[in-house]
Amino acid sequence: MTTSSHQSIQNLGDLVPSRRLFLEQTALGFGTVALAHLLQSDGLLAEPSHVPDTLPRGDNLLPKQPHFAPQAKSVIFLVQNGGPSHLDLFDFKPELQRRHGQKHTEDVVNFHRDVRNMLMGSPAKFQRGGECGMEISDYLPNLRSVADDICMVRSMFTDQIEHGRALRSLNTGKVFTGRPSLGAWICYALGSENQNVPAYIALRDPRRYSSGGTQFWGNGWLPTVYRGTEFSSQGAPVLDLYPAVKLPQGVERNNLELLAKLNEERRQLYPRDTRLEARIQNYELAARMQRDAESVLDLSSETEATRSLYGVDDKDISTSNYGTRCLMARRLVEAGVRFVTVTSPVLPSFGGIAVHPWDNHGHINKNIPIIARHVDQGSAALIKDLKQRGLLDETIVIWAGEFGRMPISEGSSGRDHNPFAFTNLIAGGGFKAGHVHGTTDEIGYRGVEDRVSCPDFLATVLHQLGLDHDRLSYRHASRDETLTDSAVTGARFVHELIEKPV
Image (tube, rainbow, N blue to C red; front, top):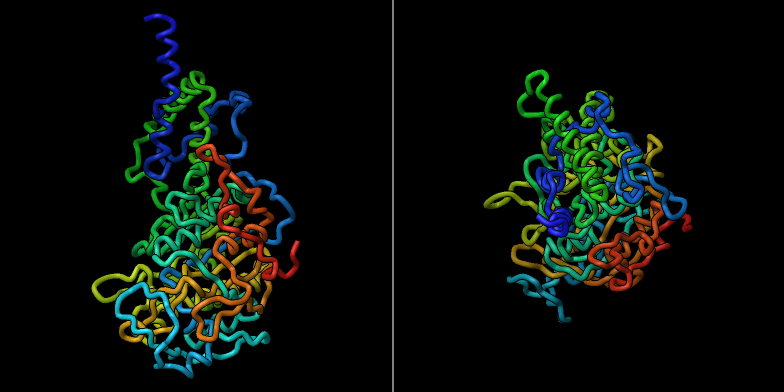
């Protein structure tokens, strides 16, 4: 073989997927869980001086400096899959009540069958909560009790009408699949304050994924170190952390020694291949998690009063399922986790399971109280608990769905999807407390004042963490990508939502 041929083959090796790449793209990157930590303990891990100076230093979870002084340092995102009806929860419309049963003469965009353009008032009763007098329906009495801590955005809107696309828009800034989630962007920008647990943790219903699946915590084209890690509220909290079968004494050490040798050979051959370094970070984290993660989620250390507040011991799963995950979320941010996603519970329904439980196309007076009971106590308890521990000022709690519902009836007293008006709640992190932002028209069909798009909402969350949504970027496919892509979406920081704008 000629020298030139040998050189071509060696250069071609840079393009061939390596062992590390295979591990990175399969099994969520947990290949050989404790590699680097154990190697370092045994003196087998290469010294830092072996790492070439050309390696990027940003793709890790070490704490990073924000663009400017932040007002918050962590986020808990309570995702309300299905499109909660703002008209039956947060946006009382006397005119809609007065015109109940009348034909709506204006053009209304209908997205499903069996819609007759008949206006439908809400069966819910509304009351004012707190000193601020914020109106919230009787379906959510616990959230109403913390009205003075909530910033209610009544003028949300989106350009998507289908659940999956709208959820992606809410969580990634755009409708396209494969984009990084809000949590992934934040962890990429800020890293983590606790190196012994993941920076981004997802707490889903242990029975099943809700609509949207793992897109809520995906890393997209950001490095995999920023992907959300699933923890469970039932059984072992950390999935796949320990081997299914314990290896005989000495076998694991022999395996690790061989891997260390192969990795060092690879590093010498391809010093610019940074993928091994990224994998080592995951292995180190996994090893530390074996020691610390489960203690962080040990709810037995919580007082009886706290457990009662969240309803975790209630024999009725309608409070214990969601309440347990909300309590876990508080413990995680208390331990320094940067971002926690809590998805709404999946519920039994006709013919199967409702993976988007707020999707009430029929029987609103029966269905909304069911899902509301599941999430109301835990959501309010989280805000109360964070506040009494002095953590609410530095933690942003988001309670949000992907769109709202129509003021006209559909089928058996249901409501169709409404992208033109919906309500999101946000608490803590410097957002105005006891404040209602924006208005909809007299029947709640469209936002008419101080409208806020999903990219606007995301830009404002980033701002409270000290991040400029236009400056936070990542080079992908020869383009500097951002979460909000403001040149296309027109996203802006909504300073009217903030107590003390920077």
